[in-house]
Image 1: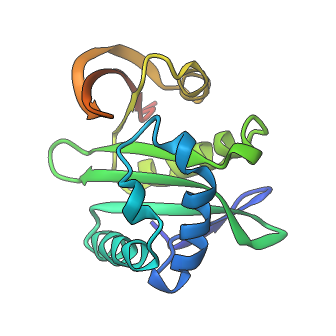
Image 2 (image 1 turned 135 degrees about the vertical axis):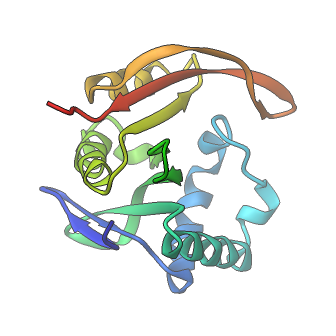
Amino acid sequence: MNTEYETERLSLMVLTDKEAPLVLNFYEKNLEDFSKYEPIPKKEVHSLSYQARNMQYEYAAYCQGKIVRYYLFLKDNPFQIIGTLSYRNIHYGYKRTCEIGYKMDLDFRHQGYMHEAISFCDQRIFESGIHRIEAYVLPSNQHSIDLLQGLGYEREGLLHDKAFLNGKYIDDVLLAHIKDTD
């Protein structure tokens, strides 16, 4: 997959550690909300050096074909990240699967931006040889479940005690999008 794409309204870019200040601003602005859905080390997220190290790790994993994280920008504002979309645990062997993850800035939700980004990028990841994309969503996150189902993801089940978040084990809903082979 490429490091940059454009959709109708968005620029999607793989960033390097040089853009760590933009990423730090994005996380600081949305930290309270994001921590409901994933384990984010609150003290470390406020550190520019932590963000830069994390971005170096992700870029190296991108170069190895293991992960790709796109930062979403409005085309007319390349200085504010409005979301991220990632594909991780990419396996091109016999499994041909990956996992999708995403975050959206609170001020830009429910405007169709993530739908636009996922719709576009799912097609690119399918073209790269992936056959199945899996998503793990908290059962209480109905907006996310609805978004994915509207994009062709099907609910496959409830995974009990799938993740450890905020000091306890939690369930996840498993959804999957399988490449149309017709």
